[in-house]
Amino acid sequence: MARETDHIIDKRPSRRLTLFVLLALAVLLTSAPGWSQLVPGSMDIHWNEGSRNCANDPPPPLQEHQYNTRTFFLRENLCTTFEAPFMYLLVGSTRALFIDTGDVADPNVVPLADTVMRLLPGEGRAILPLLVVHTHRHLDHRAGDAQFAHFSNAHVVGFDIDSVRRYYKFTDWPNGLAQVDLGDRTVDVIPTPGHNETEVSFYDRSTGLLFTGDFLMPARLLIDDTSADVASAERLATFVKDRPMSFLLGGHIEMNSAGDLFPWESQYHPHEHTLQMTKDDALALPAALRSFNGFYTVHGRFTMENSMRILITFAGLVLLAVVGVVWILVRYLRRRRRARNLPMEIPV
Image 1: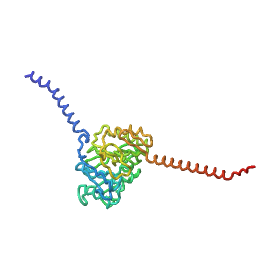
Image 2: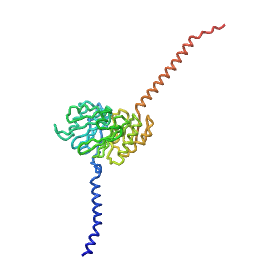
Image 3: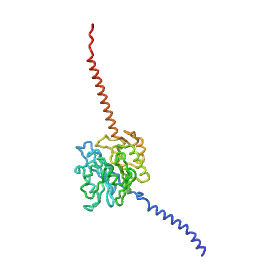
Image 4: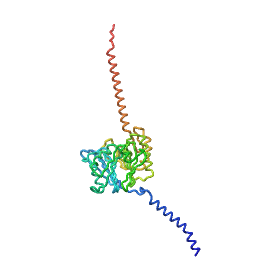
């Protein structure tokens, strides 16, 4: 009997070790970050490509896409505004987040606020509170702000740099991260200035969607501050490197499926590039931006330009050309005048 007891006791350490390993695995699995299981969604959508003749064949001004039951994408049509910006609605349990308000202020042209309110849970006083934010302050991303003014459940965050820093509590802009709590859904806010000093990107931990506004998109990357843009790209690449990402979603589409840019202000986008980009695009952006010459550069799938610098340079060249023409004309007139004033020689 003693030998049997000793045999049972000898097995206890092995059993305890097994139990410990199982418990450790259980703790690791249950304590994994919420993003380990992303809520999926559908990108099965053909965005309206505008029209060859907007006057004769105008499409609906606003297009909606339901990514999943609590995530919606909206786009203003190319015939309504050639900018055709995208806007995004994320619904949480205690409030919803609406990113950007488009390029059209008139609700009779684009009923943006009414559309967003229709997508929110609840009715009347019970409708879910809505937080309206912007990727940056350019007018084509905030023109619709006023449409939300008469809705008591909506709060619109200011678009100027002081309002951005104050609301998200950035004390060392553009460093640090902020979070927007939607109840059971957290959205990270990443400063990404460069295209504009107020630019921020939003990462939804629930779906793994990254919303980058005009900072990164299948379009011209317009750069105001190259050094800030490079720093932001490195910051974003570091952020996404070890996080799962479903799709990267920007503010516009300006190229076709082959990667060729549509003409500026085009209202017709046949064979348009998909809206969604990937984590690889975000990781490749810093190297592309480091190759930017300050004016216009194509690097792989990225087309980068500083439109203001190009405009100033062009204006300078035009001015020099005008000055040159005037100088030549003045010299020519002076020579003509001198020739007229020369005394005539009288033959003897």
